[in-house]
Length: 470
Ligand SMILES: [Zn+2]
Image 1 (cartoon, rainbow, N blue to C red):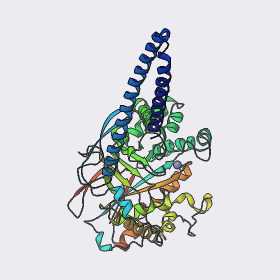
Image 2: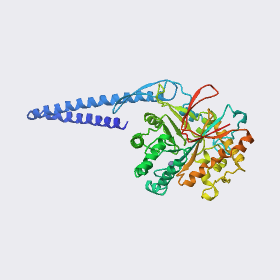
Image 3: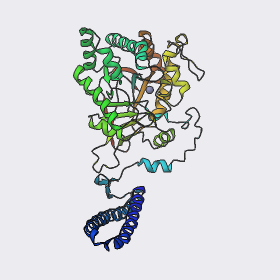
Image 4: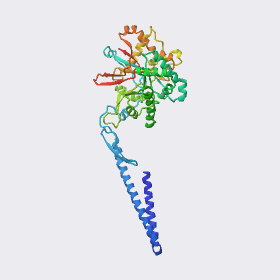
């Protein structure tokens, strides 16, 4: 609009100028000696008029276009119909299909309008509700499959610099990872940040590199997303996000011949719809996200819709669909990943055992698992797993086990394996509640479950250790 005003004022100025020139020209032509000069000036005026006419036409066209776009913009508001909008701008024409003609189950823009955002206190699960379930729903036929995924979140920049994190913490995590995984073939681990991993890997002697390659080939070590970093999705430009993804994934292909299949975005503050599109283009099959608004988590959990196929709004065919797992609780740390009650889950974060320096802020600290307490501990944990599983359609449950810069020492790796005695001394547990409890090592990472509605849901999970619990 500013541009149009400018053009109109220039046009007005030209008309006034023309009138003045004509006024003086009448006087001027009386002097025949200046006749030639007058002819020249008249020609200039004609040219100027012609140019102004062209400008006037452009202004008129722009005013017409603004009128049309106002109508088009009002049509953009959601009415569920397919629309193609012609836009003509400074840089040319663009035909934009702004709404998918296919029906989707959940339209996030509509969901946001529908959620009351009341911030109700849900009790032990502050942002949710008191979860109840029927124990009879879990039996020999309908077993709960729990996928425990040890992970360590390494920010390339947060409270310290990239170099400080690497030198003080990250390289020790990676060294102890190799040591522990080499001697514990049933233990698995996921890693996301290639900026750290590449720096560490490239300095290793050849036999270490071979060892790591074997771990990857065995499925013990799995790279998730494979970006240079776990990028911010709220403010970063898609080009920057793409470049870091190419950088990390190319490094993995070149050095370990790995192509990541699963996305792992546990700490970006909010999630962009562009991300699944870019990740789909990089051949990922499924993704995990965490930091969405807790009221959105609550609504999706109520509808058992925390797992879904994320579709781009402009996609008419579903070709952009990305299978997505949304974590249900406040954070990705161990207190928030086994179930709805952080007071209970924190007791199973064995890096918080009393002599470790970390504590559980909910007042109950972890204890060593012994013959005496194993039944009570197993029941506590099982209860949380079952409660969490009621938020999803399938009986496959993903339980990340880790936090920021975790698994720094062999001792910590061993502590987190503290869950293993549940298998080793499972007899009293088995007798007491008539359940079988097994620790199963598998590299399988895709399960197809049939839900009660008869709809097949593909459930991908990054697998480490698997417990099958009735
Ligand atoms: Zn982070």
